[in-house]
Image (tube, rainbow, N blue to C red):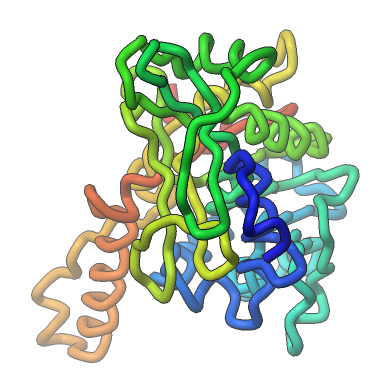
Length: 338
């Protein structure tokens, strides 16, 4: 891996390790070879996203062309499943985009346009499932004297403290993740994610932008940060050598503010995946027992679906993902009725 022998900030090291020429996200197996997201857990997730796209379609007045943008599309699993789950009359008007740095997978549905960045104008739904947690950020730590310093890392994962954090990064920490003077406290400086999210939302002319990620807010920042690695389905020590995923949870409240234009008529909203999926009809409710005697096959199918829904919405698991809903020019389609 380029530069693996020297000391540098976690942001540059992660950028190379994940997205460099031989980076983790350029591997042929894709993310699904190393960790299981909601997309891979059950087709119910894609079905819920398809229903959300239909809600956005209604809010837009059923435009002649409806966009669906899948950010950090992996190998196109979500966009493919969403297209399959859409009603025919909506699918016929949908332009599907997969945004990913890796090469287009062989055999991907020809209706999907494969892009390295979002299209310049979006009318519809931009959906970023586990994208922002892989936007590289710097890590900061309080030294013995109480100074907040950048954490430097070597290619083998060894760390040391570097220069004091200053400028816009220090301002971000002061606003969103202030570190008291206690030695060893750490934070991840989410400024690049704010910028990335604001840039993505700016592409949405009318519609809804959604970010789904493990996240935290200002009232509950983790005192020692969240930096970790994943390899072959297991959490592992984060080493920026291209052998594992590198991820940190997202300060989605900061992203929400960054993505909201001044005087926006539609406020962003944060909710749990459990709440979002319940609003989209994924509840995990067991089928009535009477169905087992009247239609055993239907009962078994419904029971399996309930189990998948329960996994997607489980506390302590996938249900703890946070959803950031950022409407642009429309009302929040998941807002509870007044």
